[in-house]
Image 1: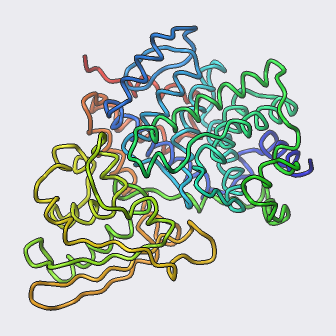
Image 2 (image 1 turned 135 degrees about the vertical axis):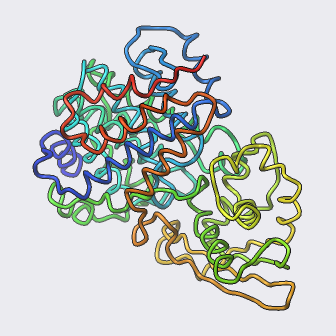
Length: 458
């Protein structure tokens, strides 16, 4: 149980003064990016349904549903906020598909309200530590179709929420262990184009709060939840892991440089392909009229999720978000990739249907790299009607480690998301939100953000 104990001690004992500026800056971007995602996603398919269900369930008014303002039990407020955070697929993420902030931020906010308030300093600390734990465990994980957001990302949510709620060591240990017993989601939800993807993100937040509250009341989880005979690393790493590597520099160096932010509102496995077509368009003046055919090669892992033939089912936005064919066709047609381009009216544009016929996506094992799911490379060849062929390779997509987005671009993404949807927050609040987040370590109470995140619509 040495590894479990080291993580528990790390989560409860670390202080912001000992954390470098870089990971703190990453968490500020996580907070800002996800607040925008929540506003933009608030009226997306399924979100109001989940809200109305949670309202019908009733219960103690403990925490706030952002944008709408309803007060619900903390675990249900987290459920709704987490669902909204993932709806547009613009929340932070990292290979091989783990979305952390979309659940960790709603959990931390609900915990802050349960605690009667939380300083910005402590809020940042809790999120940095939770992220670092999840990233370290993720680095040794092999999911084989399980969605890492629920399997591993839940540790970040529980760690952050538990720290804010001042769990003692035994309670924190049990909360994390109970979270291990709550893996949710598989990538089949993505392959089949379902709204389970966004609801699943909310369920992680809900489960995190529930596990924390159960641990507070004395419910116990398996002490050997990481290294036990049927523990995490047996189930999700086939017992092939090195605890010394996982904990190297724990508390001194932080791995939040692995967090990625999306420049386009679609699956991370589509970003490189979108970069590729936009890059070739800029260099060779490509247009839908002079492109005869496009061949895209991506890893087999990525192809399983986003490489299939584009077709519109019951959830057009999800179908488009998880399709290389759509993302490439959209960028070629509209010269950019914006949130509104994944609205149903855009997705059903007949011009897209025609362009998709010219786009072929194939898996290439040579692109995979040393560990499945880590490479997001895309290679593209575009044949023109004039008989030319143009090639480009994107080894690292925009927004990923080695090719990061600037703080200014992330702020711009926040503003685009905050202006999207049918329940925007007041325009005057946006600058205040950005200012508070940028100086979060100085905030007396992070809950002061909540009134600024409420829409005056309806």
